[in-house]
Length: 191
Image 1 (cartoon, rainbow, N blue to C red):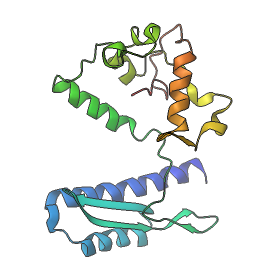
Image 2: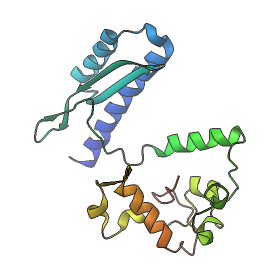
Image 3: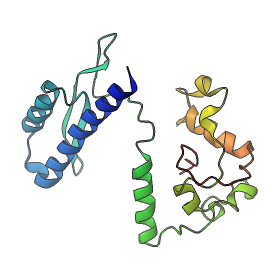
Image 4: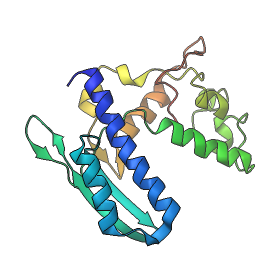
């Protein structure tokens, strides 16, 4: 799949998901499972949605379903439990949650990691602030380009993905980059 078609596929999936989320948040529990299925099916038929959807209200699952293929080449259909590689999609949500905590005075953006992770290695924890992590300027090494990245991704260990364990492990051992980076990058994902 080309980069532009994968981007288009992402936008289709995200657009329908956000539409459904907006519909459900605006109407609460009054929207029916059938109506949600109709909306998603229409988006799917129009070529604007392929993926899984879970819609909830309070503690109740209102709708759960899937459309299209997880793998178009092998004709493997999406299911409600299909796992998707979301890459950096969660960065903005993490940042929003951290900023919300800061607004509520539950976290200080200028505090160092040692404030919240007292057992973390002191040379890094005393040097990195939450603000630097959010701004991708903490100097955390680029773990994505580790030579063993393909071997460690996709496994789990004690309830945590090996990805998480490897990232934390690489941060435990690696030196911070001498020059703090200020460009937007995939680094500094500790949060």
